[in-house]
Amino acid sequence: MTAEDVGSYKPDVRNFEQMLATISRLFGCEKQHALHVAQSVFHDIIPAKQVGISTVWVNRRKGMSGWGATPAPQVRGETLRPDCEVTTLAELVATHRGLVRRDASGCD
Image (spheres, rainbow, N blue to C red):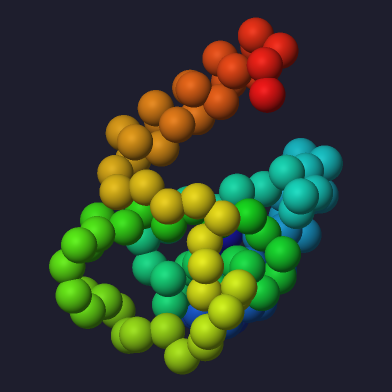
């Protein structure tokens, strides 16, 4: 599925709504089991949160000023905050592995 298929481009929430409908239809996966991992708060994190998808922000600019090549977000509050923030995809993998090990051990 592409933005052209949907007829809209990020940050339009229609892209995320169509993705949710597609994964539900094809895989039986509902939004509470979806995770959107992305680098752009403006194009990805905010619209994903607006439709109720959990998010991980890959913040490669951690410690640098500004937003890089993407526009600064125009919202504030919870919609702006990702559910998780990492600086690299390797950090995301390590975090996930740690959670899986913890869950497998039965520890909280």
